Length: 147
Image 1 (tube, rainbow, N blue to C red):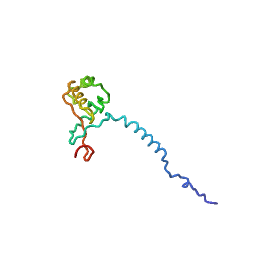
Image 2 (cartoon, rainbow, N blue to C red):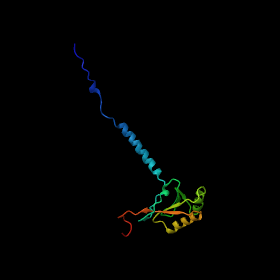
Image 3 (cartoon, rainbow, N blue to C red):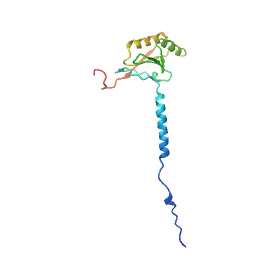
């Protein structure tokens, strides 16, 4: 009579299979790469840099009305491109439900002054009393300015 020896412990595979985890991570990476550009709600412009900007946290809210003027003089109301002659009417339409709201203007640092002035005039003509000019803080030691 011989003793039966069982070698079941040698058959166990203790290696971790990382292939499913890599597959899931690649799918998540692709999803984030596709969705991230869609999350940007602003027109890409280089705002004027100042030393002491005034904080305007209401400009980042979802219901904020932002007028953007690009370097080439194009005017955007939110994400929509607007003809300069239509800006006042469209702002008035958006303010029909909420009068007394502040309109924020984001102008490119190299935009023509006349285009910015005309846009502000059109917004004022639409009945807006409060206009906020958005700028960004100048980074210390940056390339701009005569420091």
